[in-house]
Image (tube, rainbow, N blue to C red):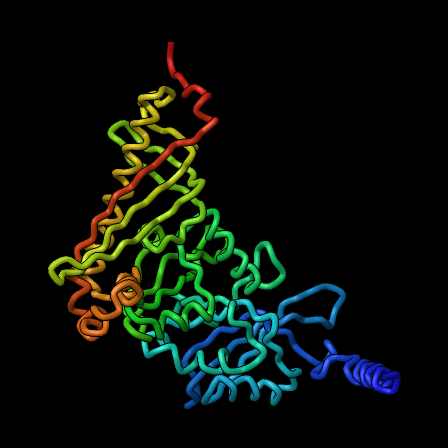
Length: 378
């Protein structure tokens, strides 16, 4: 018994000695930590032209450095960087992949393959479509609030989720799921450069729409907000409400959207129910809403705004694109598998005829209502 115990202790000690380190450890000085990648069509006969932003550690401060490379595959471009005297690129800290709209129109799955196959890139990095002539132009911009432009974009995307709700935030694994999912079309956020009087700035600007893996169109940031309402991806932001007496601005505290698929007489339909809590944060109307009846009127106007704009968006997408960006087909796939098995190949024809019923319930919870409106005149 004692011999067996000693043998176990000896094995444990030997394991501690052998496993006392990282098997694939590399010195930081031997790598270039990539934070962002821009993917464009290749030049000089190559398939791809890639721009990498990485952290320059040669000085006392963190700085951004760009390197460009051409190749006939993504991995080919990455390996060709070393021919320019650069260190080996490391993608463990990569935050964003910016894709040119020209390449996206041809299909995005071929150049995403390396990012999901290699062990370094993380599956939660963000994908973005550049609305500029190239994706490279986005990384060429100077950051305003951060040292690296790709980190600035990544932070802006994440702030958008809670503060604005004007672009979708789509991570790599989510994009792969949408590409392979039954009844859900891919959507990605878009970015553009805005010219200011004395400078330029990057602006997250709406949503890119896909048919299969190919980009075919866009919707603006305002319509994107109602798309995100449908997909239950609103965690904050503002709702602007037009009334007969002026504009109201509500700050969204909480929103829950419930989608219920139905089949009656072999006809599919979807019920969309929205339940939102909000605060009245700005009142530019000529009506006094600082009463119980006034609050009720705000709630009714907000409900009307939601139902009308969401219904209009669905009708517009159904008639103009026919691409199920809302994921309605996925609801039938999950809830009516037998129906979906028979109808999935016809969904492109079924989707434009799908009946959707929208209802909204808005509750105003606002301590600021205790403050009176500004009164002008005597």
